[in-house]
Image 1 (cartoon, rainbow, N blue to C red):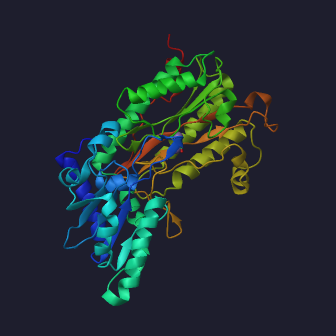
Image 2 (spheres, rainbow, N blue to C red; image 1 turned 90 degrees about the horizontal axis):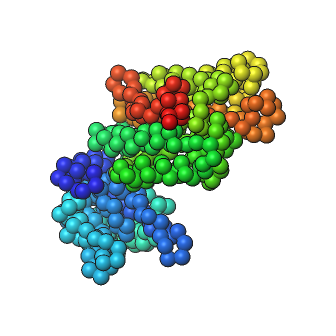
Image 3 (cartoon, protein in one colour; image 1 turned 135 degrees about the vertical axis):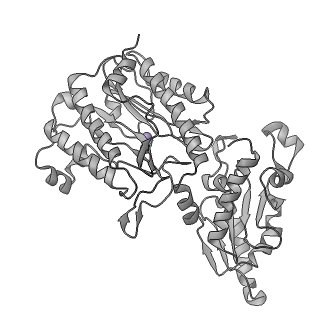
Length: 442
Ligand code: GLY
Ligand code: MN
Ligand code: MN
């Protein structure tokens, strides 16, 4: 979306309209922007707007508040933003200011953020319910809660004012779970860029290189194609590091023939890709690596096949788990019946995470996984990952030496469609032949 054109404003306007319909007249929703975070000294982390705030406004600047107040006579959509400031803008870049908030972002009214204390009470005193996400931005929590408390003490005198504070995220997150065409477009771009990154990594990784050299290739593919960067810290895990789930130091020297597990996905225009591939470094899969890889790939393909409207969120996990357990029994990693292994959780030694999560603006995206105590029914427009794996610790003394220190995960991003599903990340190679074509390319 980026440059805020007319059609984009329509997208955000329609989302605010749905939000206002959901909270109904008599309520005000107050959304704070993400706080600025200090990295060290006087250096800040690169600013990333809060996903919910961006979803409703398309506004990426810090120190802002968006107000939705359906039916309010002074305006239903109000923004509080940083003022234009010629001198500061010389240092840190352009600000939209209050004029921009109205003209470019469609606010009915806009004020500078310092006017929050003056203006917000006018909205609070007319609201029975206030929707505010506590805990996102502590400084803003303090300012807003002070004003809400004031409005509550005025309630007996005015005869109106907030009697309930409600978390607006339930409504926004249900909306975010169902992806709109424009959102899918941004995700497809993030995924196409990520596919290039993975192919590049498989082609470049060779024995004697350091993992960070591959991380650099991934970053290059992301940034050179317009992605913001990685949507989460890239995992470049060679050899035994692949058995450490959140390995991100990425500094080991790789050896030819070892497995390289790369979990890396780009963020493009506020939307994430999340892809994992495991490939043999500068070589073909060895016999044992291949056997293990085939088990994980089979689990992943069958899990993906379980995705369709009407199926449950847990179905791909249960499908993958069954295939992984059967595979581990055949390879002599686990003993006993599959039922017993699953019942007792013995598989967790080698498969310790779940198979799927929602994907969208956030890599572990929002939306309920369970509804009324049951695993959620899948509907067209939802996007989830499918990412089974097997991880054998380097010091696991219950398996043969040859298996120790092997880690494999294969992760794709899958859209639920009216007819079934679409693997949105299909352009990233994963068959043994396609992977080997890259790892052995001259
Ligand atoms: N990259 C984070 C995950 O796969 O969940
Ligand atoms: Mn994932
Ligand atoms: Mn991942």
